[in-house]
Image (cartoon, rainbow, N blue to C red):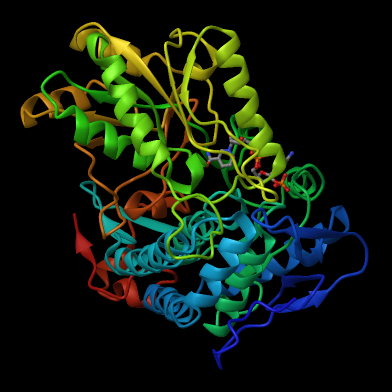
Length: 508
Ligand code: NDP
């Protein structure tokens, strides 16, 4: 299995049937899994599919990794994150190509979302770690020490495979934790590539471990081992619930980033054309396989037809096909199963009286798990298409009667991951944003800022905890109060203590 761009002399070659444990790739016997390119349906690699037999050794490696890494200085750890970012930049073309062949993401989007963005997350986390209040005095004169929580079990999904790994790995490593990563079965190559980048960046043995296998087998075995102090998960509500239950029973921390059914409220005074166009494009990033996609477009009832027509024109403008081409704007679904889920939703919606204004076509392509993006209108508010996460290129247009109804409809969801508000009046947009029960609200189509430090995570069934920025670091530290602490009074302070910032001790 070669993950190379032929012209690059620094190319990384991933060994076949191997896991990354204790600082090196180890070939393992036993079950394997094929990695299939969803655009071509061809097998592009064969990877190890390990199970419970690996758990003891990977936990032991991660525990040893933790013992050393948690004793390093913050500046060393922040520098290490910068070195991983450097390695990712050096190998950016290879990594983007792997992401495209694993999930069918258009290559331009893969470069932006699976290389540039994770690099910025690594660098911003390093900067935050250097400034983080690792060791502070509180108002009572006690030292408040933040220290690494322990071994982290990270279970990640396939839809933004590199970004979702790095949003967990960067703050975990910055905090001084070691990590065991179990990526999605569909995307092992990007995960193993990240392991190779960590190796190239000189991350010590046992600090980063990557094992590949099925969620129901390997994921479950790791989860039930209880040999970790934090479990951090991104994926479906059903699996998230299970992980949260096990973590609750084991009394270990769980951060859960689950699904969404995010609303985009277009207020009556907004420019409908711009709002609808931008919302559709935002919704259809990665063929709609995005947890914070704005999949419910809420418009004044009398403008639903107009909005649906605008949305349909945008949907029909997508260049769907070979994701390796620069001109392609939408690739396939990640798998046949995911495409069938999308078709099933559209079939149900039509049966329940909704109108499929455009999309849902599958026969245009001879191979690959393609489906054309769909716009749905006339759906009832409580129908499946209006309530459940589709995880595909489907946007549902819903009408509302007045601003209060728009807010009620936006909040009428078990999810609360993200939302969008459109208005010509900044004050009104801001006021409506504050009434939405969601972890992130975007006004007038603003995109993720270049500095990815704003917290990301859900209210309600969208999850627990936050990713990105200082909030992410908080998830991986324990807080210790040292009362009557003589070390700070003696002036030896942060440099002398284990796992504290190298800067001066600040008295709060
Ligand atoms: P899952 O929640 O099943 O998978 C997410 C991760 O959890 C994968 O690594 C998976 O491994 C692992 N996993 C599965 N079962 C267990 C278990 N019992 N113990 C430990 N780990 C486990 O999501 P899917 O990929 O199956 O997607 C299903 C739906 O989830 C999508 O249609 C979408 O609605 C939603 N989803 C939401 C995401 C988000 O960003 N919020 C991301 C991806 C999906 P494996 O892949 O090997 O099964």
